[in-house]
Picture (cartoon, rainbow, N blue to C red):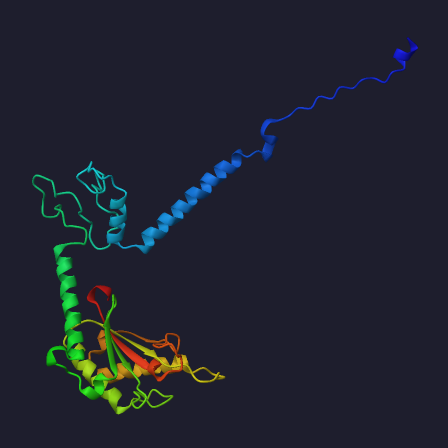
Length: 282
């Protein structure tokens, strides 16, 4: 009896186990992952809207459309938008309405994916204009406005911005006095020639200057000032030759940052450019 009384009391400890480990559970991770995925998709959508053209966006939208047409309107909408793209740049796109309509109006008829017929005609006329100017400079068909002595200084190319005419130095014939923006006689002849050719159209133009890298590190880098000064000299020369001053949109110097050849010190990098800008980019 005394042994039972002297025994130590028995203590029972009950531990409550919470399912999921409280705030250390994994359910929030799933929700967070869904949120991050949604944000990534959102920013990707914003980037696509900013980095693509109207025609490219239309192509992306059509890619995700079902192969079996359900709506006559490419956008699939009705009412105020009626399938029109809210991202149209110049005009509201009419891509589907009218193609299968019984009596579509002229404003609501299908116009295709590249714009109106008027816009396409303007683009074709612009392309023909650029090709004609390039032909006159290169002498295609034997109707060159450039003498052989000047032609060896010229390279032309057509880009999205317009027709670029590049005048560059040769080993035995520089366009400017070395280290200055003073033009040589050949540069004056080139400026007069480009003023006559580009004077045949009404597009605006841009001038750009580039020079080669100096052979040694200089305390004061003249590249920016010299390239800009040469572009300004070209502008003044073509204006003196009769080119309309108000047609000059910009004059820019790029120093030695964009070489034309691999060797940054090559004479070929000394050049100026005249760009005949496209009408729809002015």
